[in-house]
Length: 138
Image (tube, rainbow, N blue to C red; front, side, top):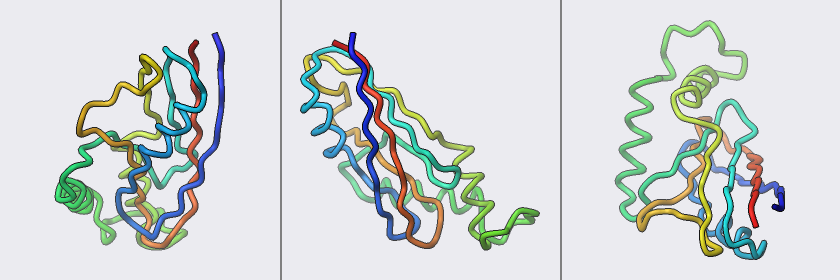
């Protein structure tokens, strides 16, 4: 059994869903493992991770619009030290996840045909986000 760890940096342009499936698939392929489990971890509290449809861009638009309704910037929040998008970003992260587990078989991630791996940026301004990949397998 082997373990490998790698850190990615994803630069965002502000709120939205940023697909990075191809980068992860390429890194996994280069590791030459056949069977295992990949953990994808976001090292932030105002951005999160999703596995979501990657074919129709209106899905991403609707997801973002839905979360804007759930946690609007003009909500009655106490925490706003980094601006009006600060607490809504934390709430959106709490409602999603910062860690994904994806099985690997025959040297490839076991994602469905239309599934992609996304960083969900919840802040208005651009950020550099660190994503840690941890692969265990053989």
